[in-house]
Image (tube, rainbow, N blue to C red; front, side, top):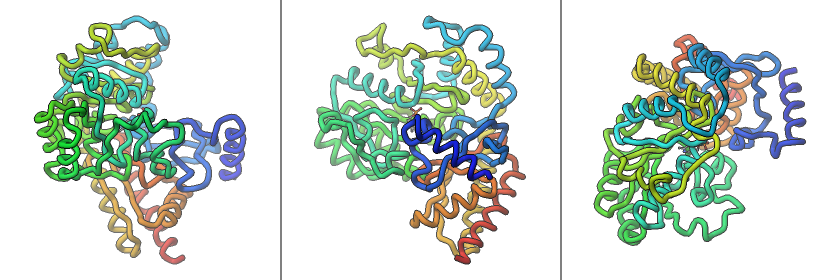
Length: 417
Ligand SMILES: Cc1ncc(COP(=O)(O)O)c(C=O)c1O
């Protein structure tokens, strides 16, 4: 019945939407089957069109650190929507959100809001190029920085999941200034910087590479980036679209104690509504229009609803500081997954940091069986082993216990086959 309903909805969607999807372009092709059509959500749970309940570890790809439909976030939105949905001029709310971001993120003195992480990254790179007067950028293989043409070079996330890290439709000329290097390889970076030093405007990095499984930076890697950027007058950009307000209130830069020159944000700062932001030292941000000559704008940027959900979310995070508790829950879950896999003689690699985790198997077939086994019993993971999973403050130890029990049953079935 459930299968039929989702199947039918998916067939109908595919008639009108390419592949039947908008947000999860990256998903389900990897694990097979059809996406879950969500009707509503609450706390740690999503409910599909048939009323089936799932514990959700995807959390809209990360923004929902407080869980779904948090009462304070919903309450603030109910109020805000009555005052208007978009004005195209400025609101006090935008300054309030900017101030919270500046106070929380160590390297940000000024911040500009956008509508998505993709836009934030595009704008930060344009700014770095305008500021340095140079063209080339370094990115790392397997990292995902949104879908701008010149960043779809050996990209992670959906591009990796679908096996198209270099997208059709991107002229070679558009990626000729993108130098792709292996993540965590300081030697290769030093060689590349020596070769291109006069032309390098920026190094962009996900401080935790969370779009090709969750890969942690090796000791000294981020420090080396900082040193090299300083030495050669290169703008160091941390793409904290995932890690911002996720690893700690001050993001990965606070967690690892390294200050980039520019930071890109998204996801959590919109509390589940579409948003992005980039910020850094005033000296660099002043190059942005209208004060400077680097053009950047957006009809709906600073949208009052997104900003309201963001302010409410960030205020709760600031007040409750849930990071240690989230870390503890994530550790318990990940250790349990590893232990159950070992007991059932199944090779799985679980990577985690803070409240971000990924489950990886060398066998795609095994991952897919695990994925669908869990889904059938009410556990919703991000549908690819390249994608990160997340915990929210709404996830309870009971949820984790239930996940462990289901996992054990599913792994036992896999082993018997
Ligand atoms: C690290 C990183 N940067 C940028 C983006 C792009 O953000 P958006 O999907 O909001 O455009 C993503 C999306 O997942 C991301 O994970």
